Image 1 (spheres, helix red, strand yellow):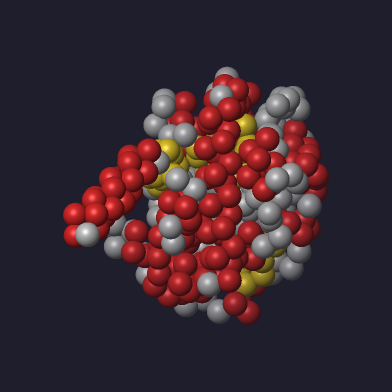
Image 2 (tube, helix red, strand yellow; image 1 turned 60 degrees about the vertical axis):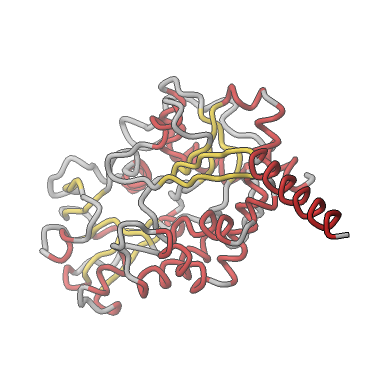
Length: 330
């Protein structure tokens, strides 16, 4: 009897070991450092959602010197998190990125200004200095100014564009009248620096009709011809969206999971919990599948972004529902 029990235990252990060895490996490259902006993926891994789908997922943090499209083009990732402007620009330059899922339904991009500057609306931007992120993040801004008929080369009737780093110093040091911020990150850095919310006036890109899609999941087009890869990505997206929905409902716990995975130790708990709550507002309403109307709106914005639009023509084949349909039975 004891031998039978031992044999059964050994068999169970062997099966578990085999299943662990057989798990499909997936490497995810994030757009930025470990923070609650990517909480859904860390939650999915921590809660075993990837394991339930027989996946072994490696999450690679990003940073200022890491370009996700370059990483995937060089074989360093199976799937990346990227904003649509950068992804479509990269596709037009020859790296065939395809959007397979869109966890973020809304944009978190804003322009925030000190009320003391006298700015009350976009019509007051003329003659001002505005901080703008570049590396593909400037195109919604350029499109906005184009729609307003405001030149971006300076002058009394234009705006002076300050190439802003990934901090809020230009506003704090009065180098700019307004700066670029995300609803879940830099805006709160301004508040934490001692500036009160009622001392600011903020313009959401969503409200201005120039928002573009952020934080989508992108893969290389040629890989989608492989049924096994599509199946693996479907399981990855299914588990990731389960993680995102858990994070929406439990933002504080999600932030704590993110902090446990931050090897730098640089993130602050109160900031990450606040970020997780704000990010939940952006993923709310997404079932994982890209909304074609949101895609078309983004493309239109990128095509009309001033004298040098981010893309020269409307992309073909830049997104697919093949993965989400398989993941959720669409």
